[in-house]
Image 1 (spheres, each protein chain N blue to C red):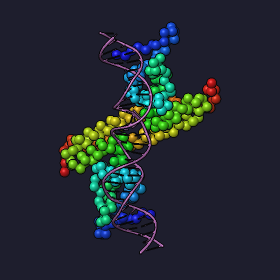
Image 2 (image 1 turned 90 degrees about the vertical axis):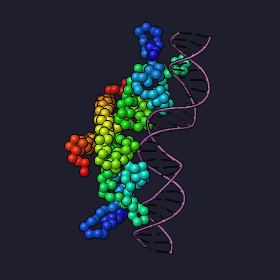
Image 3 (image 1 turned 60 degrees about the horizontal axis):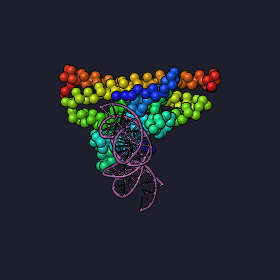
Image 4 (image 1 turned 180 degrees about the vertical axis):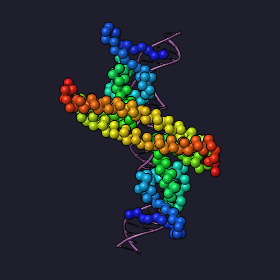
Amino acid sequence: MSRSHSLSHSPGLTQTRYTISEVEARTGLSQHTLRWYERIGLLPQVDRSHSGQRRFTDKDLDWLGFVGKLRATGMSVADMVRYAELVREGEHTVEERRGLLERTRSEVRARMAELTDALAVLDYKIDTYAMKTVSGKGRQ
Amino acid sequence: MSRSHSLSHSPGLTQTRYTISEVEARTGLSQHTLRWYERIGLLPQVDRSHSGQRRFTDKDLDWLGFVGKLRATGMSVADMVRYAELVREGEHTVEERRGLLERTRSEVRARMAELTDALAVLDYKIDTYAMKTVSGKGRQ
DNA sequence: TAGAACCCTTGAGCGCACTCCAAGCAAGTA
DNA sequence: TACTTGCTTGGAGTGCGCTCAAGGGTTCTA
């Protein structure tokens, strides 16, 4: 089903490289999405095999893992791309990167507060329904 | 700026009715969105003035408040419409309503766990950047 | 009574984050 | 060799949740 991809044959320098379907299986991101991420610059240029097929590295997987976290925060793809650019530009962008992450963090905190609040309403409603169902006295 | 809308003149039965812009101001939902909610059945038929303009009641506002909570949970509009239909259908739909809300609740909980996790990563990264910035020793 | 502000309807358009399509090349298997 | 599977590209299409446009009626204020 999946080919083992220790493509480097130099002993002691075994760099594992993954095909796009292996990465799809590992990350849960579709091949479409992976190619699209690369196209828009959310993923740096991925290495190619001699015939032009993508060969992802462990570093790519790590980055995709982090991107997954950012995505989970609800950060927009545009902002993630911006962040990726900053990373590529080097150490002098650390300030801006931190700003971006801090803004994201406070949005996440706000989101969580909202969810907590909505959850309380949900709990209350569900309890109400449970009482109606169990006691059967609410069917007026 | 905003007209006072105690349109009923029968004493002792003062039912406040709101124009669409008053509801917009109170709920933060745009007039477009309010009309659209009505169109798709997320809001029951709203009363009209003699000339066909919408006149919202306090009951409508309460419902919109609840819808806002559902929206905050991330529930899809389709599911909210389904829920609204069930409410209109009467007491015998209580079971299904509860099911819908319970499913939503567990999604919210999952979402919050994800956010908590992503927040930890964010905190870690931000700390890393803060150290780089403050001590200046990370600029290799 | 004029003008501004407000509201109506139907239907099209938009931004986001993918998702799919078509046509074709490449590699592994019987 | 033939077949199957997997990968490539650029560009078009999709689903969601609104958002806007056009064209026209209504209500308030001076």
